[in-house]
Length: 223
Image (cartoon, one colour):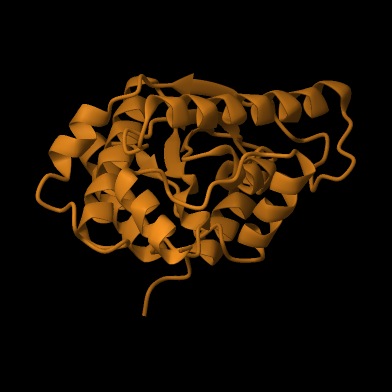
């Protein structure tokens, strides 16, 4: 049986709140919709920097559009903190402003990493390579930037295996000497809340994870 990562995170947050500590968290984000609930939840307890590194995305146009939506959402959340106006949000004056650290679009390295796995089904070995590539880059950036811990928004998706993501995160975190914050953000209505927030902020919400392989699969499913 897999650990209850959602409960583990709750206990860690309770410990931090009792201690009065707000660690610096580097949060890998795949897109604004997935990060919407995660940021709403974690900004009460951490000083968050969003790390936008997604070389799997199918085109530079798509990459930049998703990045612009991420920035727009962060700006909206930060205005709430500045004005202390949290109407429609599950937030309090304890919420912290959020920063963003963006990486250049780097599809060549992604395609090189998944060469030979192009025909894998969604959720298979190709996705595992992609997860590790993004989490490894996040762990490296967290270490180099002096962060206390790192994690990813990817566990909010019902289509992503949270146990697999946590295993990868813990392993690469150990390699880089940086703590991985365990999660299963889809639990406790996290995914539902992300849909609500996407509607509230009119976020661009795509029907595929980002890579050309998943886009083709989504197009086949919808035809």
